[in-house]
Image (cartoon, rainbow over all chains, first blue to last red; front, side):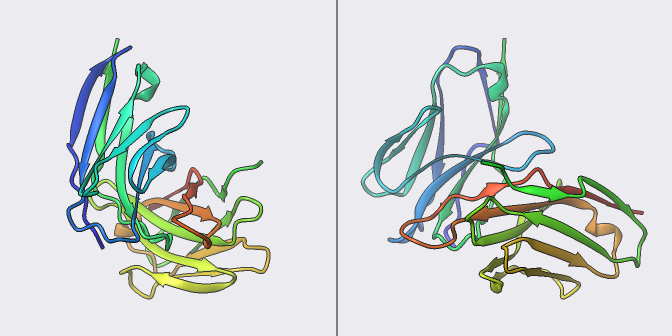
Length: 109
Length: 115
C-alpha cells in the first residue's frame, strides 16, 4: 500500500487560502488520491478525489502533477469551521483505506 | 438521502464482556467497512463486507468479527473485551464497485469504553 506523508499541523487565518501538500512516492497506476476531513468525535468526511491534473468542487481544489508523486489540497478562503484534521490517502478502490496521522489545520480569527 | 447510521452512539462495557455494534449504510451502497480510531494508532481498517461476503480484512485479532445482511446493514462484534479495545468505531459505506475508487461515507461512530 502506498504511504503518504503530509505536515502534522498547519496554522492559518480566516479568509486565507490554505494549501496542504501530500507526498505519495509509491503510488500505483490504478490508485486515486482522496482527501478526507475529520472533526472531533465525527467520522471522516469525503472532500475531493482526483487521478491527475486538477479537480475542483464546491469546497476545494486538488492539484496533481504529471508524475503523481504528490498532490496539493487547496482550500480557498478558510473559515473557523475549517479547523479540522485533513487526511490524504491513496485509494485503490477496495474500501481498505490506510489513514496516516493527517494534518491538523487550525484557523484563527 | 440519509447518511450512514451507527448505533449505539456510546457504549460502556466491562473487560471480558462482548459487544455488538450496528451500522446502516446509505441506501444503494453495497460495501460496508469498519475502522477503529484511537489516539495512539489513529484510524485503522478492520474489515470490509460486500454483498454479505467479507472481501478484505485488516490486521486485528479474531475477537473482532463482523457480518453483513442481505439489506447491506452490518454488525461488528468484539468478544472478550480488553481495555485496549476502547476506541471510536467507525462504519463507512460506499458503492463498492465500479470504475475508480468510490469514496467512503462514514457514520459518526460508536464510542466504546471498556472498564
